[in-house]
Image 1 (spheres, rainbow over the protein chains, first blue to last red):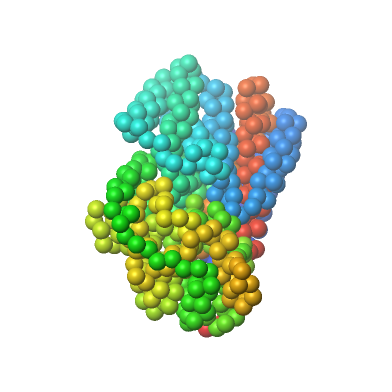
Image 2 (cartoon, chains in turn blue, brown):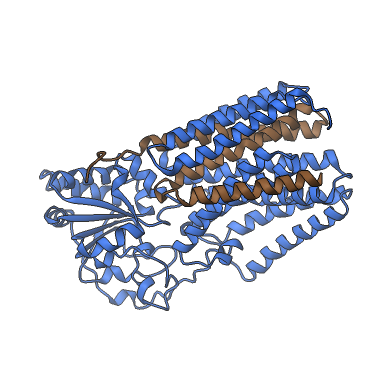
Length: 466
Length: 98
């Protein structure tokens, strides 16, 4: 280590530049105006780092590296071109790939080094493979649920938390044993295998509405495991990238948990989806007012200020392009149209913004909860498209509601509320929404895409048969 | 070893603070592209995988390293591609509009 080859210095300088570019990449993400420059900085940093690594004097065989880089590119390109509605599952899948890489490298490093692994090295290596393994299967489960290969409903059973915690406890106990006895190779597969099972069990009880928090948390775990790998390999570049990714996922988890009024420990220990189905009784007695597309169009056309509240239902119905047509039709008539975005609307942080941006709706019309909530009392029409719990006034008023205390969009304060919904059946959380029974609320029953389409036709003055 | 550890911890602490201060300021508008970008950057783990696969210390480590490169490269290519696609869609209505 005294006389480092000159190339080692070159590689270190390249890594230093790459680290700076990564930090700049994130810094430029602050505004949509500079964000694409950030991507470029990240790409240059990445290419530099890979090129620098290829100079590494220890590398004797480039054949497999080349094959793997080509194969990864061939698989990566289609995953970069998925439809925007598939972005949440693609993101979950990419957490899985990232943590797979980290877990495999950690495993190989252990077998290369055992039995002579210093204690600190073994501690971070254990952290790397445990976090990596549980993130791998947890993310695959999340992706499966989002892609609807797996049931979206939370699956719960008695003593679930106890079972999950014991899996975690056993893997930590194995890690401690391996730190003290790094030669005990026979235990290592269990230290990888048990977190793999734990990852599956961790995501099983999680329902679709909790996905934004889970994806953020998995993002954070993936970052931390990469940082741990940086300690194992003594790579500062990797420590920096892991720390940036870890803190990003951490902040997003905190934002998501605040937006769902869950405590932070609740998030850290993954105790999601614990919402008990509310008693369905009483809901049938109340009456709702419904309206046709023609009536809805007349009310919208007469309004000065309209706020559209999109939710996951809009994504499912792929209604964002029809919503854009509605936005155009109303704006042309001089109606002021804005969009109210709840932090947990959709299936991942920022999901609605991406879908609406895809439909060419200008981003300065997309306002988050804190910006828009004071506008609702001056709003003529609040049009809710496929959102439910995030508009539920029971969160403000009913202490017995499972979502009591959750910050919501105050759509019930608008002069008229219109809700596009398939039927009166409550969402999977089973929470009844008193918003639907207000005198000022009109229910528009139907598929979001079809209904918005018929409103647009009515506004155009054409098809009365819509 | 121990000085490497201390250096590493310092780097981790500083990078954590930088990440926290920068990301805290990013608008919820861009949270989805933020996540896909950090994911692509995180795939820098590929450097460890490349050394592992290239050093050819054992068949086992070469196989694991090769699979790890594939997984990380998927994230690099896919992550940058989709982040850029998303960001290209964000347009403002009119600059300077009140």
